[in-house]
Length: 293
Image (cartoon, rainbow, N blue to C red; front, side):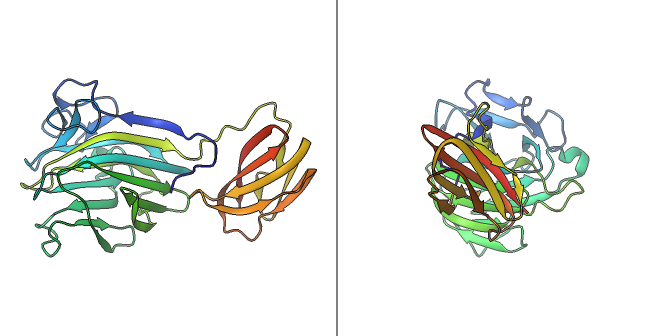
């Protein structure tokens, strides 16, 4: 579940492929495993599209190995969303890389996803397989011949991820972002032609900073300290009517109605991590990131 508590996340990357010419593409936030333009490039196609008229395509030549660079994010909560289309009986595969430059690192894998991969998972025809950060694999269902939405909410500091497919949770656990010297880190997505049955389309990619809360400048509400072991102090010029604390999954974990101009909220019983404190005082609302040690 993403954060939906009245503030906007900051989109770092959006991709619908409609601005590119048809055919192999290399450039911008798209590179390849080798780092060079050529047969590994993603292909811009117009025979399937979730929105607009074009999408990215990974075929069956066993060579295509396109990398979507996500910027080597090493802290915070990040949401990656995309849509896939796989025709009946065909295969899809992609994985997350800890570094966006596998040509230099040699590749450091996070989660891997196989769809109807009867070469590597012959006992799971027509199913998806998620290979998790705990080195176990998790089967799940997916639809053929229609676009479906995959969403990943990564808490990089905790090295965890929640994965949903069309809103249904398929994995909630270790993200496997702790294998490289720069760990934890999410670097990019590797779209690979895994074997001769591989053929799928990708579209409508959005990568957002879920902790992109802009603290109001000139606000009459003060929140301090922002790194705590127990109490956080809140003061305002007006009456503080409501204080709500949310975790990075968007779940409310604390609530108070102080009806005063100053108050303390004890966060000492919460697990260590990043939280969002939302305060209502008079006609003003402030959201603030607070870290519990």
